[in-house]
Length: 116
Length: 112
Image (cartoon, rainbow over all chains, first blue to last red; front, side, top):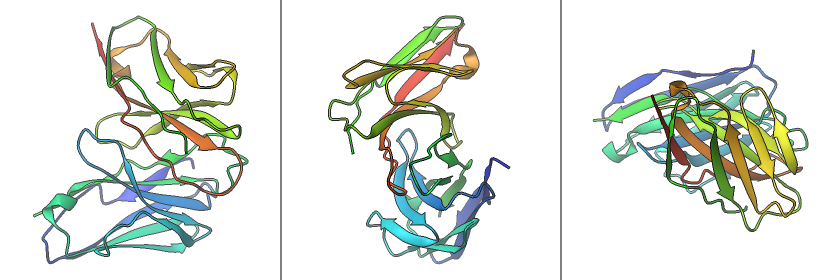
């Protein structure tokens, strides 16, 4: 299995809702990432998990809460979002050690989030 | 992390060879160069990576001169389906999971 699976593919939520985005990989990768991408812009890093521990938080607002329950799963909990948070949210995974970077980083297809 | 600079956009006709050059003047000794392709509403897809000289795989070639301050992604005989955004990234070899920071990328438009 060489894929990163993200669910749901599309999500519409109100500003008072609580929702979660899910990401799963079975490649044995021990690093996982959340990215946010606005239209016609490059992906922007949000969080990095390495060996199930949060290693990088790019000063993301607390209304975004990541969670890594185990080595295969990564969640992003959403609460009290704003319309400007509407974007494509991408999950990625990689080897935790960059001594072996064959194949690079594997991205999922993303969740298209719309906040109304 | 080394900053990268690429042309914002390029146009090509189907069947032509396309070369996209990326500048990374402050690349470090341990850094390697990697390229990704992204279609609309999809995640970036790894294309190729290299450290020096030339690397070739089934979809592209990567040329890296001796000073490693730039690199060129070469796509042979492009088709309409190669229309996408192409990102050049520089990452440190070795160490632990790190930031993968995207530059603006190059938007390639292929037409008939």
